[in-house]
Image (cartoon, rainbow, N blue to C red; front, side, top):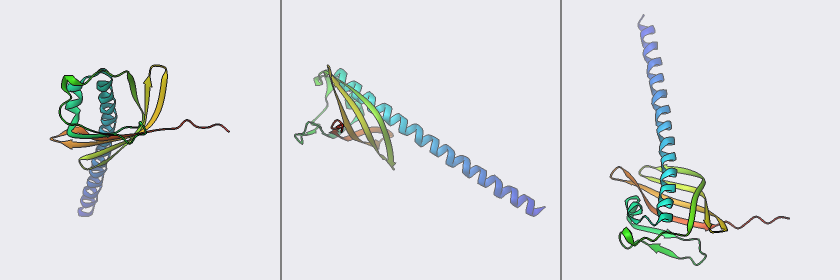
Length: 151
């Protein structure tokens, strides 16, 4: 009888542990999808010139490295507020992956940038940090992807 109770207790503990691990993995997946969605919301705010929304999603000392080929680095000097102007661009996050390291998450993947009739593919790396229970963009970098050459 004692062995049966001990065996049941061990089985119950293992099942409970498996449930906790599955729930944790599901929560991580949901968090990853949320960061992908938030990245798109940040781009949408940029496209619309919505500085106040961007300010709420960024750290105060945000740094961005643009894909313009000049090596230009943009550093946030203060709130964008109403100074942010609408863009002529339409930016869409493509396939991407999120890796998390404690209170830091790194989104890497692709982004499509449309400017009128011109479309450009970029690789992107966006660094999110969790501060005061809120995810904020702390850094971003884009690299232009050259069109594939046909043989």
